[in-house]
Length: 361
Ligand SMILES: *Cc1c(COP(=O)(O)O)cnc(C)c1O
Image 1 (cartoon, rainbow, N blue to C red):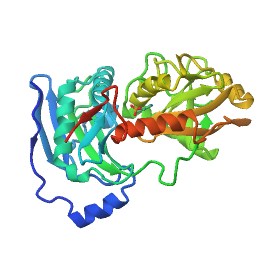
Image 2 (cartoon, rainbow, N blue to C red):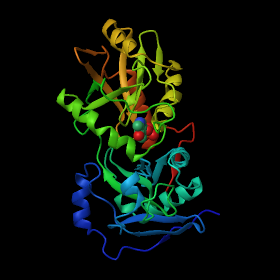
Image 3 (cartoon, rainbow, N blue to C red):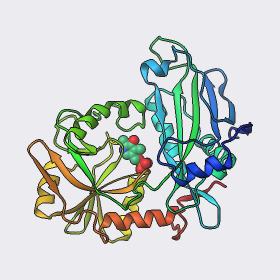
Image 4 (cartoon, rainbow, N blue to C red):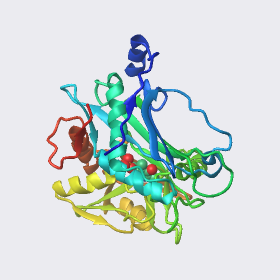
C-alpha cells in the first residue's frame, strides 16, 4: 500500500486577486502554491508523517547534514491543463524511477514510485487552482529529498525529509523560441566515470555555476561540458541533454554513463524514429560538432529538458573560434518539429500513442 498524503488545508491561501496577478505573469520559480507535500524517513520507522501541508518555511537545524555535505537530490516535472480542464503529467513514473536511482547514488533512502506518485497527486489535487489554463503555461513540480538529521559526522543521514513544492510557470520562450549560445568550457568538467553525473543532485548544479560565470563572460548563456577523461567528447549542458541532426538523416545524442538520463531525451529518441530519422546513441567528439556544423554535415544542434522542452543551439563558442549549424531554429527543423510534437502530446492537442500522459486531477 502506498503512503497516504492527508491534506492539512492552508487556512490562509493566497487570495484570488493576488493569485490571478501571479498567474498572469508567473515567470519561473518565484511564486509558489498554497501547499506542499512532506514525508520524513528514519531507519526504524521508514517513511512516515506523510502529509500535504500549508506552504511555508521549514524549520532546519543548523547542523542538518544537507547544509554541510550536500546529501540532496531533486526532480523537475510539470502538470499541464488540457482544454477540458483536466490536469495531466508527462511520464511521471520515469521521474519517480530516476529519483530512486539518484537516491541510491547519494545514499538516501529510496522512495517507492507509488509513494512519489501519491505525493504528486495529493499536491496537485490540493492546488488545482494553480494549474494555468493559458497557452503554454504549466505548473512546475519540484520533488526533492535531503539529509535533515542534525549531525556533523560523515555518514548517510538517519533522518531524511522528502518534499514536493510547486510553482506556476510561464512559457519558457515568451517571445518565440530563441537559440541559445553555448560556451565550450576547457577549464571545468561536469562529471567523471563513477561520479554523480547520472544523479539529479544539487551538488552537480552548484559545481556548474563557476563555469556559467565563465560562459557569461564570453556572452554565452549555457555551458557545454566535455568528458573528464580525455576532454574530447561532448557530454551535455548544465541542465539539458544535447542532440545533433546530420545532413544524411541521422539524429545523434551522447550515450548514457556520465550524463543525466533526461525524460525529454528518451522521448525524443522515440519521436525521432517516427520522423524517419536513424537514431544513434554514441560518443560524439567535439571536433565532429565543430567541423560538422562548419561543413553542413551537421545541420542542427539542439538541447532538451523539461523546462524549455527543446531549445535550438545557436553559436558554439570556444577559446579562439565559434560555429553555428546552418538549420538552427528553422521552422521545419527537426528541433522545432519534435518540440511541437512533444508539446502537442503534453497539452492534449495530439494523440498519446505511447501512453505517456497520466491524469492527476
Ligand atoms: C534534469 C536534467 C536534464 C533534463 O532532464 P529531463 O528529464 O528531460 O527534464 C538534463 N541534464 C541534467 C544535468 C539535468 O539535471
